[in-house]
Structures are given as C-alpha cells and as structure tokens.
Amino acid sequence: MIRHDVVEPILLEVDQIYHLACPASPVHYKFNPVKTIKTNVVGTLNMLGLAKRVGARFLLTSTSEVYGDPLQHPQVETYWGNVNPIGVRSCYDEGKRTAETLTMDYHRGANLEVRIARIFNTYGPRMCIDDGRVVSNFVAQALRKEPLTVYGDGKQTRSFQYVSDLVSSPSHQRAHIAGHKSRFTCAHARTFPCWWLRRMLFPSIIQAPTAARLSLIDRLVHRPCS
Ligand SMILES: O=c1ccn([C@@H]2O[C@H](COP(=O)(O)OP(=O)(O)O[C@H]3OC[C@@H](O)[C@H](O)[C@H]3O)[C@@H](O)[C@H]2O)c(=O)[nH]1
Image (cartoon, rainbow, N blue to C red; front, side):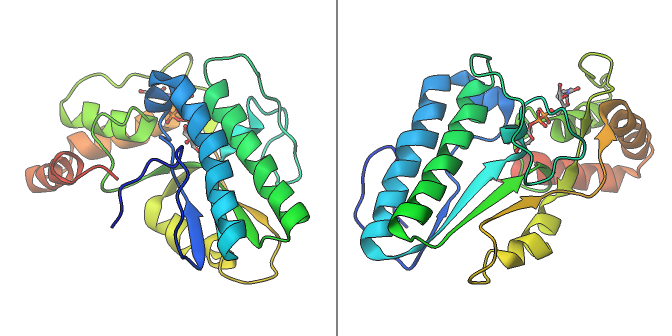
C-alpha cells in the first residue's frame, strides 16, 4: 500500500484508477474547504493525467450534491442541477462538478475510458461515530438516549442507501462493463424526509435488546473509519 496525497502528482503503472479521494461528510469537507476543492480539482487532474499516461480505465466517485438544491425530483442523470457557486457547500458541490467536467474532457479529448458514479447519502458499518451525517448522528444519539438533532423542519428529503447495496448495485456493476454510458446514479429509488428517519430509528434503537444495542455501538465506535 502507498500513502499519497492526490494533490501531488504521482507516477504508477496501473490498469484501473478508482478516484475516491475526498471527505464526503458535510462537516468534514467544510472543515478545510480550500483543501476540499484542491482535492477535487488538482487531485482529479493528477489522477486523469496518470490514467492518460498509462492507458488506465478511470472511475470518479461523484455525488448527489452536483444537483445542489435541486428543482427536479427525483434527480435524473440528465438534470443539470441548481448549485450555489459561493455557498459553504460549494467547495464540494462545485469541486465535484469540476471533477466531472475534467473527467468528460479527458474522455472526449484523450479517448480515456471513464465512469462517473453519482453516489447519494450512504450509511453503514465502519462509519465514524463523529462522521456528522444524519444517519450516523441519529444512531449515535439514540444509543446515548439523547434527543435526535433534526435540522430545520425535517421536511428535507434524501435518498439513503446502505453501503453494501451501493457496492452490489446494478449501477456499480455497470462500472465494470466496457462501453456502458459513462455516468450513473447510485441511490435508493425512494426519498425520505429527515423527520421520518427520526421516527423510524429512535424507537427501534431504544427498544432493541441490550445485546443488539451493544453490537451497534461496537460497530460504530470500535471499527476504524472508512
Ligand atoms: O444531525 C443531523 C445531520 C443532518 N441533518 C439533515 O439531514 C440531511 C442530510 O444531511 P447529511 O449531513 O447526512 O448529508 P447530505 O445528504 O447533505 O450530503 C451527503 O449525501 C450525499 C453525499 O454524496 C455527500 O457526500 C454527503 O455530503 C440534511 O438536510 C441535514 O440538514 C439533520 O437533520 N440532523
């Protein structure tokens, strides 16, 4: 294994590049916004340059956040989004949009074989307890028997997906099929408001047998962060 910051160029002999670098939780990517956008722009350029040099296939993990504050529900891959270029989330939204642009420009200009996976709100084992995203926050708060922090009126909706569904999804499989269209959505077909998530999670965790709760705590706290 090599530890390397994608913001710095690197020369390797590889057949495939999975470009996953970048914090995904809003709390984490807002912590150092300049580093976040650098990772998405300079880091993506470096990885695409490497892919071109060695003729590797390239996968970019993008995000539902490329749609910004969408005016269309659900978001289809042809929707261009509604993004604030100067907001606190822009380092991530616009960074990933630029990363997508660069990926498609290398595809068109250098004939690089590319895939772009637009991943929606994903949760599951190996998340940090302080990840900051809504599902792990609610689970951690319910385990501590604290009130669940629903921001705003809780009517905001998200498409949540379990991590193993993401990995085994048909969309993910398509990433491996040569010649398939270059971008695809990785999301649950339905969206749910945050208030619903609170109503569903809290009683099921509070009423769970102690052993089940301890196992959840173990999975959240004692596993390394993904
Ligand atoms: O404790 C919390 C945390 C979050 N929320 C709300 O829950 C909703 C979801 O927020 P999250 O922090 O889980 O993350 P978001 O859905 O905004 O973005 C995330 O999902 C898409 C991924 O591609 C992105 O990488 C990731 O940023 C937001 O409306 C947020 O305000 C709460 O109500 N309470």
